[in-house]
Length: 219
Length: 219
DNA sequence: GACACTATGTCACTTAGTGACACAGCCGTC
DNA sequence: GACGGCTGTGTCACTAAGTGACATAGTGTC
Image (cartoon, rainbow over all chains, first blue to last red; front, side):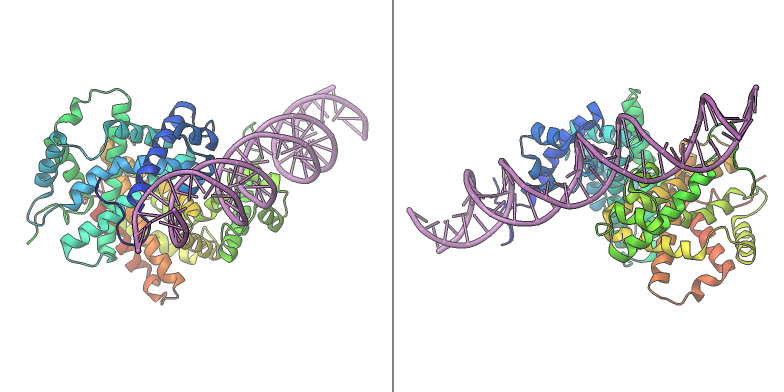
């Protein structure tokens, strides 16, 4: 129960994020079970035990209820990338951090990850949901800007940095869609369980997408 | 007045696309002048001289009214890329085709291009519009899949192809945003008027984003 | 224990979007 | 050129997404 009342403003922030995630979980479950069009705001509210009005206080639209859970699907990788030290290669860092997370407490629930994959899958057929996934990718791109800017010792709004970040985010997205689709199709997960191999794959596509500018140790 | 009654089905298709574009023009103009929230379906309908019901027959939502005009912003490049012959380098092809289009009839109106840029700019602040822009980028990515698959003589759903396509589409998007923002800010357009230099820039970023796999002549 | 503040509930209301049906134009057939 | 089918549009009633305004319950501060 660490104090949440940080800094004068509102005591929420963290609390608010958790509530949004909780709503998002229920919404995503309903979207998956009965489709987006087949799910009403009232149903979501009832499922999470709040009034409909409160749902609209936390989300600007029905579809955006899916955003937090979709975002959860990318936080792990982003968290790991944020702590990428300059002296390490991308492969090394991903491998070390991802296997550490696999044994210690992982930052996100496995059920949430599955829900996120389901939403990404649904985005294929439900144009309303596509936005949520594309927003998450957008988020990835923003973060990549910061990360790459740091590595290259350039400003985050530098054109070169933005190009590398966009390309990286794009290939990460394709990999996520690829892996997500495979898992949902019930393919053998063994292909993705080898953290070292997976790290190398991610590192390789990012290296390629940035023309080799991102991946090696710097300094 | 070439016959439009192609193939038993409906005689529209082309006609329908033109109507959608016309509606999109008015919608985009209104969105720019008074914001998305400040523009009602009725207003769009009135501006284009149709009943509101008919607007919803052609567009699934208010925001999607912006899609055709935004899509117009990327068709030129895509049209050029579709005709990229195997024996030519990307630089050569872009330069030749873009300068040809500049003298001969360009495929899209300049006013439409400006409207498209304005919508992309609006997408920054209006989350509802972001979808339209992201959908256009998605479209670019799909097309890039086909183009790159053809070049690499691989299936379009090949993972490698999709990675290259996604990275290409992403950097094209950044370039478009960069140039669009510059033009709307009233920067000196001279920087973008040199077709040869522009072609080289686009070719360079695509080469980089694909790790050099796309750009050279093949065969 | 009174005060301030924020989150939530309730209810009336606006507006995006759909369904159903009627009508007008356009086409091919006889 | 009257007939019947087909397609696009208008009209109107209706559903549901989303907002504004106000009352109230929780929660921390003094």
